[in-house]
Length: 66
Image 1 (cartoon, rainbow, N blue to C red):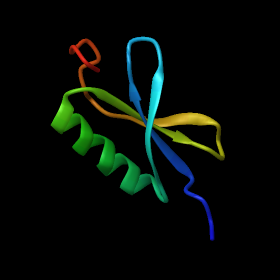
Image 2: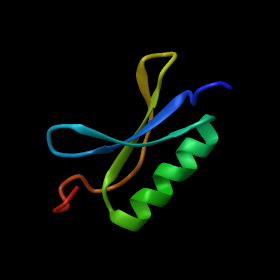
Image 3: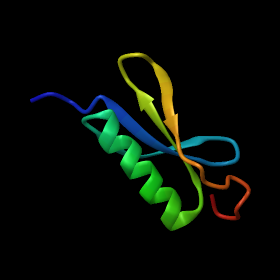
């Protein structure tokens, strides 16, 4: 069994909060856009192999509760 390559995080004011993992980049991007549409918060995708953020949503980090 292989582990998921991409981690999805919610961007808070001072930290990233892990939400879930995805097997592929397309699924991860689709998921962060869906989450951002529901919550209006910003989400990012972290590639475990490359050790960097590879995608971000268009949410609003200034929204209260994000």
